[in-house]
Image (cartoon, helix red, strand yellow):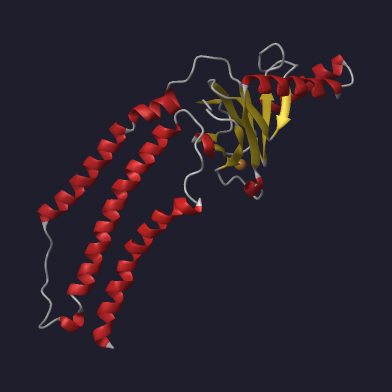
Length: 274
Ligand SMILES: [Cu+2]
C-alpha cells in the first residue's frame, strides 16, 4: 500500500496536464471553442489569445511534468536516510523572476498595436447608435431622420440592435444605473458601461447574421437575462429596417407635440441618470 501511494499520486498529478491539454484539443470538434468571429479586427484579437494560450500552455505542461517527476522520484518509500535541507538558491530566484517579467514586458509591447486599433484609433464619425445599459436590458437610441442623436425624432428601441456590415460602426455606450459590460462575442468587443461616462466602441462586421449581446458584468439579480440581439445586415436591409421602425414609432405617437414631449422626457431621464 505504501509503495503504491507514490505511484498513485504522481500519476494522478500527471493526469492534470494530460486531461487539460486533451480538453483543449477536442473542444473545437464539439463546438465549445471560441464563438464565430465576423469582425474585421477579431483575427488580431484571436491571434493574441492563441499566442498567450500557447505560451501559458507550455509553462503549464512543463511545471506539471516537473511536479509529476518530483512526486515520482522522491517518493518516500524509495528514500533511504534522512532528508537533506536545502536553503534555496539566490540565482534561481533571480532567474525565475526575470524570465516572467521579460515575458510580460514582451506581451505588453507585442499587443500594443491591436489594443490601439480596438481601443484608441477611433473612426472619425458621428455615433451610429447609442447603447445604454440598464438593469436588465440594453436600451438603444438611433439618430432620427435628422441624423443627430439627442433630438426629439430619435428612434428608441430595446434589445434589438441592427447594424450594417462592411462599414465602420461607432457605438456610444452609457449606463443608466450600475456597471454593465457590453459584450458582442462575435465581433470580439467587450467594453464596460460606466455610469456618468460616454464611452465610444467601434468595430466593423464582415458577415451577415444574428448574434448575441450579453452583459459581461455581474450587475444585479437579473444579470443572467440581460441579453439582446444584434443583426448584421446589408446597408439596404438596414435602411429598410430603420425606415420601418421610424414609421412604427411615429404611428404610435398621437400627435407631433406628444412626440416632442416623449423625446424630451427621455432625454431628461438620461440626463438625470448621468
Ligand atoms: Cu448588466
